[in-house]
Image 1 (tube, rainbow, N blue to C red):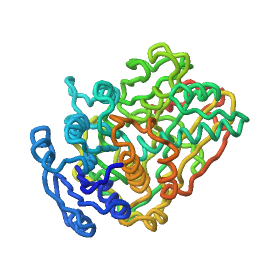
Image 2 (spheres, rainbow, N blue to C red; image 1 turned 180 degrees about the vertical axis):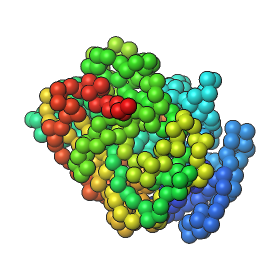
Image 3 (tube, rainbow, N blue to C red; image 1 turned 135 degrees about the vertical axis):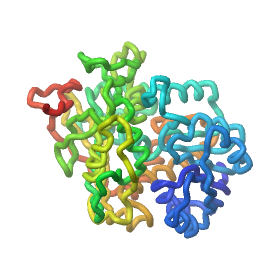
Image 4 (cartoon, one colour; image 1 turned 60 degrees about the vertical axis):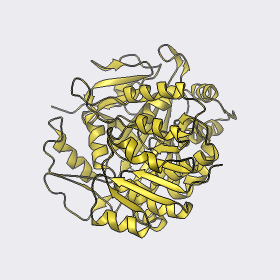
Length: 446
């Protein structure tokens, strides 16, 4: 087991700020932070937890010279910035036997050759190629926050819960065993279902984009092509969609793709299908046989309704870019009420569907950890759990959340995510009981 005496954090936005209280509870380590800008809030939070804050934008030209002197086999590097390459930082940390974790697979630049934003499929496939070549190296956990991340842990718990409730007592331990159990349960659709009802006391300015986590992160997801894991039961792909084997890349940006979802508290709601790494990783993890011609695979996607003020902000992206945005702000201390209802929603052709997840409120989140909202605490608790697992499994190479010890991660995170809700439902997206993707999709009325 590694002993961590230095934690380096790249990016000091709302999630990294919310992480410091949890790091102080779990580590007695030097903390060094790099961010492209420093304001009074960042200075005060860093000072409160005795962290060293540096105003430095990490780029592909300076990351090696800036970070290398801080890396060792007793360091841990957290990449919590947008557009700081996961692949580059993993390569660097592994040279120094330094542990690594991020919450999203990031490139240096999201723009591709046609000036559109890169798909998560392309980013993930590049990282998979690196991981295959560099197996049995120092542990680097990618895409491990709330979702992607802990939602894949909840997936396994939910599958076992559904199986138990229907008299099936399998105990899967390998990828193929989890996929076979998923097939036996006739899971055809898996939604990562999220309805954020947190409310700010502030009125949103007309040209301001606000949300409960990273503004830049949400904007990027809204402008990337919508992506989903594509199930073996699906008959017709949407017009102009690109089939990438285990996933489908839609022609539309995520902000323009609306689907029906359901949660125990809000019941049916409309949500945006935003691209997320877990939509791809879960779909591939639950594939039987080859990705191109699977015997079985569920359709998997992220169905997200942000807080209402974030939805209002999304109208600023109507041109397909962020040109209309004049200011950006993360809701935190100004949140006055609400919950972030986030869970895994298993929809079976044979059995009752099952939703398992968190109804964490802003009030409980603040009691659990300073500088947190319901949204941030779901992310930061999962980050620390991943760090703890990496310390104990320090030579595991590059991993996604599906490959971690799900019971270890769950036991650490569960107190922060409480209340955990498990609920069965007969809900279907339409009257004809179809579980085809087109039955979930909502097309705006002209």
